[in-house]
Length: 186
Image (cartoon, rainbow, N blue to C red):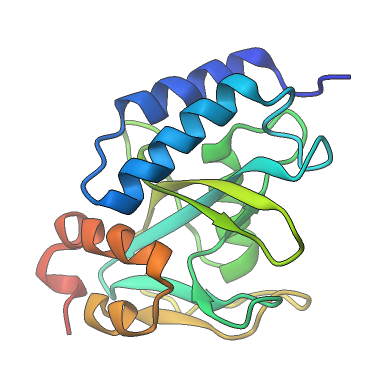
C-alpha cells in the first residue's frame, strides 16, 4: 500500500530538478534522487524499503549555523530526519529542526527553499535521499533540545562548521555563506 500523497512526490521531484548542483557530490546526489523518486514505490515511507527521502534543515542565523551531534553516528550534522506520513520534506526539515534544537526556526518568506541535497548511507543499512532546506532563526537564543534529543547542539561560525562537518555537509555550509554573509564567519 502506498502511503505517500503522489502530489508531494511530484513537488519534491520538481524542486530537485530545479536545484542547481555546484559540486560532483551534489551532481551525483541530484541524479540519484531523481532516479529513485521515479523508481521507488513509496519514496517518502521509511518502512517501504531501505532507500527513502529525509528532510533536513540548514539553519542560518546571525550567530552562524546550528549543528548537533547525531545520536547514532556520533558526528556533527545538521538537524533532520524521517518524514511522517503525509508530510512534505520541507515540513519535516522544519519539524525535525525545531524538535532537535528547541530553536524557533522558519522557512524564508518565499516558502520552503531546497538549499542542498545529499545521498548517504544511514546507520542501519539504509540510504537517505536527504533534501536539505534553508531555515532561518531570527532569535539569538542558545539551542535548548528537549530530553531524548542530542544535548550536544550549538551555534557554529561557518569556519568552525566547516572544520567539524561531515563531507556530505560541506557544500551546504558553503552555500550558507551567501545566506548569512559576514555575520556567520569567525
